[in-house]
Structures are given as structure tokens and as C-alpha cells.
Length: 539
Image (tube, rainbow, N blue to C red; front, side, top):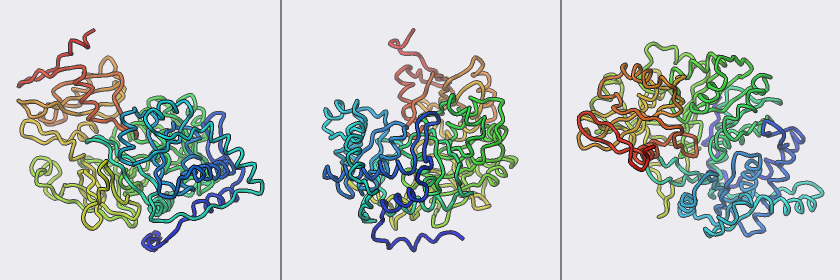
């Protein structure tokens, strides 16, 4: 029976401290997290470290709802630090470890944080930017003192107010400067309960979940849920094959969290292998192509689970179980768009038609499909958004306009067809780049292909295909695949780079890809457009 989360809307306080202390009492010396090699973190250590950090934050005058940033790589330190900030009651602001000074300043202007928890080698740069730094190295010394003083065990800290701000995430920034996304402590708690309730299994002792994506978003959400079951997470800094391969070969990994780009790298690194020990692969954040699904099925079996989540409303929004995912990818022909399943309990969704979408795209879907912008509201959704000028409320009656395009199929499943901001207008047509990328996904001749456009006086926009990590025959295979598309949808220019820019969630940023292209090439416009390398980039 689905959990009725509406009954939780009136809770006044949440005691994160008591909950974590109970987990430590229950699972104690059991390993909670490891790095796949030599380092590990037990439930007892997580509890002690997090409580000690919470006390240090309080001693520094940090109060409930005050924003506190963390600037950390995918390391076990990131786990107890996120718990420690939560126990204190502060509004955690997790930042991408590779952020530039300008990006950090923008995030600070939005979230209004002063304190940053990070490593000592970041202190000089951050203090010059005007931030107050709590270095992990210094914290450990203070924490050792706290731990000695707590000889009789961890002291349970007071509850936090449920309506206080508890976490501020940032949008990907693909359509402009990133916005802050505010979650109250209550909405954080509800999100964790919904994520656990929607799992297709109950993790057990010894169940290991592999996490490879930045901890600032999806990986941390999975970690919070996994902890409550007493299971173990393996946290890696990217697709680290020397650590991953032995775990797969020994059947030590039962579960993997891997968005399509990460799943593609994992499969490419083990081409031709078969691993039957994996019970479920959690994927989402971007469309999963038929080609990539088939490769995953061949390597791991029918274990891929698809979900839909956003910075503004974390998983689970919709879910497609492994069985349902497999059934969908056996459909011939596959319908337009990427299937992400059915809305979960408590999630409301609607499609709002947009006048500018009338015409070709709707015709492609068929007369019985109503495509438009996806709106949603849910108990785990963010409270509001932020920019440097202040709070941005959600739409009327609490609806969030996602900016995603889609429709519901005849079974009630949500089908994603792209982003409004990404729709390319070329020669009088509107083209969805996701449709082209899905066709091009999964090849030994390239790692990935991004579809974007360049401004053109002749065409309006010129569609270009920008490939990453290409082989010698990539253009021949690419053109052969593109022949399956209508002429107006086919990219007119093909370009390749060794690596393409990605946002903190690991997704390729079309905006930054376009900027990368224009930093190396200029467009020679006209009926047969082409690009010419800039003189400063000629070799």
C-alpha cells in the first residue's frame, strides 16, 4: 500500500540526530561506505563524526536554517559532512568541487552563504574571495576533542524546525545562470521516505550500491536512503574501472546508480563481458536510448530501472521498474520520446499545451497525443527557487513549470521529448535535439554526440552534431544513422572534440558545447553552411 505522505504535512519538528543515533545503535560496526579500495566508514564512525561536526558548527555560531556550503570531491568525507550539517539544522549548500571562483561567487550571491566546509588547500583561495573556511583537517582536530569529551556516547541533539530551510541545490544552468533550489527539512525528510518506499526491493546486509556521479546531487540522495537499511555504498570519483572491474567480477556489487552517460562508459570499459551479479541499475536524468539499453541488457540482464527526477523535485517523480523498462524497449516501433514511467504516490502531473509547439512536432507524435510542457507538484518538491534578487515562488497553486516537453501515452506513462529551451528553429521547422541524440546513442565509433545549433541569418539556426571521443570511421556511421531522419532534422555540420563540457550532474551542457565550438570555429553562413577554424586555433 502506498504511503500517505499528506499525513506528514503537519509535523513541526524533525530529529535528524536521534534518527542517526538509532542507526548507529542498530548497525554499529557494520561498514556503511567504502571507496572500493582501502578506506571505509562504519555506521558508528558516521554517527560520531557527524555529531562532532554538528557541535563544531554550533560553536561557530551557525544556527538552524543558516546556509552552510560544502566544497568536496567524491570522497567518504563528503558523507559525514553532509550528515553533520543536517544534524546542526543548517541549510546545506553542496557545491561542485570543480567550481571556478566566478561560479562560487555566483552561488554565494544566490544562497547567501558565508561558511564553506572544505579541505585546507582551498583556504587561501576562498578567504581571498571573502568566505569563512572550516577546513576538514582543522575540524578533525576539534572533532577528536569532542569525541574524547563524549566518553559516554553520542549526545542526541535537539530537533530542528521542519519548515526551516534544510538544503539548497543548484539547477544545471543549461539555460542560463544556475538558480538555487530550496528544500525545507520536512521536504528533505519526505523525499527520503518516498525514495525508500519506491524501491523495488529492501537492501540487506551485504548489499552494495555503486555510486560514481557527483555526490552533490543524486548520489547523496541514494546514500541517505541506503543508510536507513543498513546496507553499504561504494563511493567513487567517476567511472574508476580499476576499482569497479574486480567488484563486478567477484559479484560484490548488486546495485549500480548510473545515468545513461555513466552507464555508457561502464559498458564501454567492459565490452563483451557479462555480469550476472547485478540485480538493479538505477538510471535517469537523461533519455536512455534503445541502443544503450540493449547493450546494458546484454551485459547485465533485464535489471535497468528508469526514474525521472529534477533539481526542483527530486526522485521519485516517475518510475519504470526493470520489468516495465524491458517491456517498453521490446516495443516495435518505439514511440517518440523517452519513457520514464508512471507518477509515484503523491505526485501530480499535467501537460500544458504551448501554442508555439503546434505543427510538426505534434504531427510526429500522432493525432491522439497532446504534447506540451510538463507541470508537477509533489510533497517532496522544493519550497521555492532563488536568484540573487531573492525568492522565486512556484507557479499558481504550487505547480512547478519544468521546462520539459512531453506527453502521456495510452498507458498513462510519461514520455519525455525534450526541453523547451533546447528546441531548434531551423528553416521554418522546430527540431528536438533529444530525438537526434537518441538515434545516435550507443556506438563504438564515439563516446557520445551532442546536438546543438549555431545562429544563422539564412536558416535561423543551423543544426550541428558535436562528437566526443571519436574513432576513424565516425563520420560514415553518423551519416548512415542520420539518413533515418527527415532531411530538415539532419545536422548540417559535424565536429569532434576530445572531451565535451558537462554540468555538475555529469550531463553535457549544450550551451557550453556551443560556446566551445564558437571558441574554435566561425560559421560560414548560407544555403550550404560550414565552419572554418579560427586563425588562433589553427595548428
